[in-house]
Length: 307
Image (cartoon, rainbow, N blue to C red; front, side, top):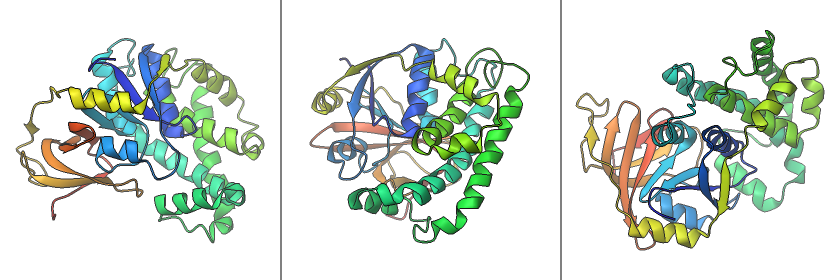
């Protein structure tokens, strides 16, 4: 491996990982795979990110990219063709990630209601901590609503595909397909009743098969210690970039903490390197990985300055 190689820290059962895998598939990328545990503790991942426990995480040398919003942009920058944005509507497709999150929520609620009795005590404890906004004890009462919401979102996709197009935006796969596919992949693979719920949507399954056939590029398993050593031996080329109109008035070198605003995936404390309208990047270091820069999207991430 070298400092320009793509290293993905992930676990395959995650629908968020499935998004990145399809991006790598569209790109036909050659990449390195580091398997991360599904539940805490995740000492190797947290050492790399500086506190963030979520996956997938893309490492390129001493740069670490969090969230599929930011991962998509980095992959597009490094491997321009084939594009994740074949129609040129980059920003609208990035904005779709929040629609994708809204689509995912009823699937998540259904999974908790229908599957949590099968979970180990350790797994349920972890997920309760990860999603504190969900009342696990009363979630069965909301199951009909969750079903209705999943079906409503799926109907939008089916209707869009009803004119015979191969993919959501036409004949070429895009980030739109990736956003939508992961939710159906997750719900169908974990809850057989979803097939019955969506059985009258004739255009979905053939489209899902086409998206799945995109593949994941070429995966090369690698030991996490090798990934850490590469980070330690690398120097990030990232340059400071501060928006003079930043909404929070952030400045280069300011100590902040960045964390997601929709779950408890952990926060990263570091010095501001980039603060633009749609990116926040901070520098952190430790004895395991040396100095790295962790890049987040701005949308759905909170920057704390009162440290």
